Length: 263
Length: 259
Image (cartoon, rainbow over all chains, first blue to last red; front, side):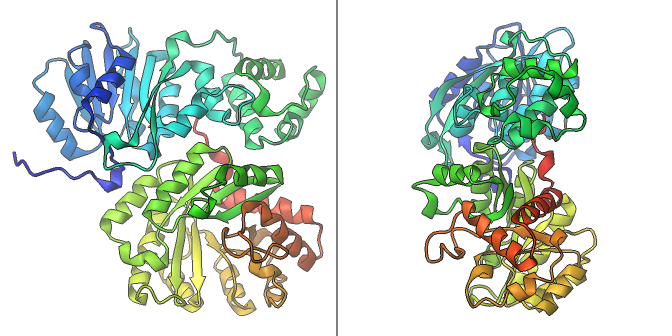
């Protein structure tokens, strides 16, 4: 194989982590144990893979870039517990990657333009995921963990907190990447195993309520929700303060409201 | 409720107070803001901003004045970036014969490549036209305007060009230039059917009356709506409702948030 230097592909938005200590800290935030399967999204040069392989039972890397994939295969193909899939994570049938009887751990350091689609994709299969550790832009991390009443509290916060307990593990300076991106980063851990115990009667309805509410976040819920087909008569029968605004409702309150509308 | 379909909030002129500008727009009845890119860097910035704030959306694209930067790698990057669901259009793209920054043939090639990208991704286009209307119309026709939707932003042509644009099925939007005292544009705006109009500011440029001469911002989109209401002889609420529905339909703004 040729040893020509690899240039980050602008088209894939690649910014590579070049600091080993940060890499170790990120894997430490996931802390895989010998019985765990780790699905790593976008291993790149394998800087996280190297620290994960000695700890986990199995590491499944999903890499979209063929050249990187070849390099990864060369470097880590010799490890019995490493498995590599070349392809687009967003287009994959995730359940086919997972063993039916155990929950996987998800790890990712991916281009920032694709982070929220990836988060939503993992949320869809949350029953099969124990937790997820991902490095994302700091402002987005702050939105994910924001509490009701905060400026940053929005649709990302509600959907993340509905199904997991998200926490910022630590912040990462933009200087540890090559090339240097124009935003700072944070490492976030979504703990699905500690998802709040919520009695959600109708998941589709709940999604509709949350999305419609935040679609016009400055408006009172009365305004945003009464436009939805069939909602108005139901809203009239419920005792609820519809003059409230979506940014003040906790996740539990969204669930209660949606359950009562479903009755 | 209004939709600001053309802002450049990533400009450093907003560095000091960007969050306050966004809050002010939402406080004054703006429902959504689309930030429009002009090159690769700003395409990324538009996406970052959209990820940071509910109600913000992004476009990706290379402005005709930057058309020299267009190559296969750039096009691949635009395609990759457009996978983010908050990207709602390719733009701003087109032709500019006012600024002599890039040869027409180079501009045309970049424009055509991005029209193809729009067709491939199913996204509408945001067209920048400066003294190049006949060229743009020729290119759109030869690329096949069917299966292509979009808007002629900052419209400043005459009724004849407007008629051709409407026949191609495109939308038209006016900026602060509609409100200027000597503007001829009200005579053009009155012929555009309500269902083809969008609202925009093009901020930080082109502040409308009575804000002329100061930095423009999305909250000022209300002045454009008021002027259109005056020209059309309808209540501002009609302009707001129709242009909002047009923007939602054209840019697919109801469908984001993939959960």
